[in-house]
Length: 519
Image 1 (cartoon, one colour):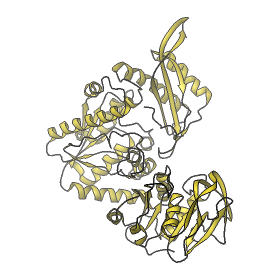
Image 2 (cartoon, one colour):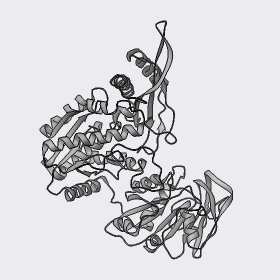
Image 3 (spheres, one colour):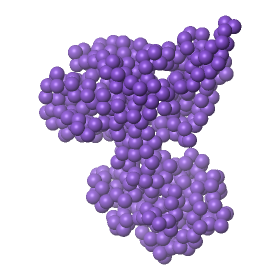
Image 4 (tube, one colour):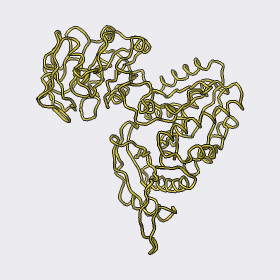
């Protein structure tokens, strides 16, 4: 049952530890409605901050009967807004409201078929009577709480989808956020638009307007510095902040010594034409490489790089005088993977240098206009800002640079080797016309040495890996099916043109279980 529209339209996803929570957010946003993840035990005040039009309870690895299992706070139901429980979220709703949840005789993992009962109600409106969905559960609802009725079933699950007769409470045993649920996007759109009565106001234009207003409110009459790398994230941030504060913004390009071949010269040349003296160039390569001397642990690398960036920005701020704010291009995947302020049930995958790698005692206050955006949303904002398409669609490059693509110790020599190999990978993919089809592509210098034969002589040299993936937002990715002749050209050029490399391998791992970067 729909509710009346309000000035703020947002959906909250309460995270119960599901690997799919970020997918729920993405699917909601694809319906042009803002969504945000909060931990499952978010307080009433946390929800009041967002004033959600609806709440989605994610799946999770627990059973509702596990000791210490995450629970559903009563204030969530008392808000009076529509609630949608997915998988574990369904079990929570059922148990808390008086139903009965049991361990199923037959577990359901993977594809299943559901059959609607009647018209499927408002949640399943516009979907066929039989449809494929993605199941991933061991428990199931055996008896519904009073007031609920079934609207879909599967062969193993009598209550595949349910709704309350009088309250705006809905639940699904399957995962509509997963692409394998063929009408999942429609179902979630039904929830946010038809049931929660949200409009479609989450657009690039609205993001720009909100970001500029937020920066102006935060900064007031203060001055801002922005770390400009030349990538789409930092460029969009710099553009947004400049529109908000004008000449009170200074952009700083830091040469860490960990950049791609010729990147420092190309970036500074390009942006100095547009920004003039408001772009400051800092060569801190010796500082960064010295700080990384002897460090092999990837998490430690990220923390060191994050701290060093802040040290550099602090020094530059002192030289400029009276700078109170630092703007940076933190994205939502950075926050999610770092398990910072998202879900307490979420596992930390890696510490992004700009999230968990920042020192507690930094003097400037952070401005992060993109903190709750995915990469594809940032690109849409960049195009709406009028940025060049080649810059907007540039392959992502990690903030720590080549330090996280060198497995093991980072040295001047190993950086130089990787720069040359990476340049060949990029040149060949772009020459093949695949630069826009492949989301990210790069070389990785492994710590492995292998025996080879070059010019009838034995070699014992580095193994280099090539990584190319397709993705939309970086949260999930699949390995790119590059043509064999392209891979052959890359390999041939690398072993012939890059000293110290005698073997090239191609990574065919998806994310998950791997990450995009190697580390």
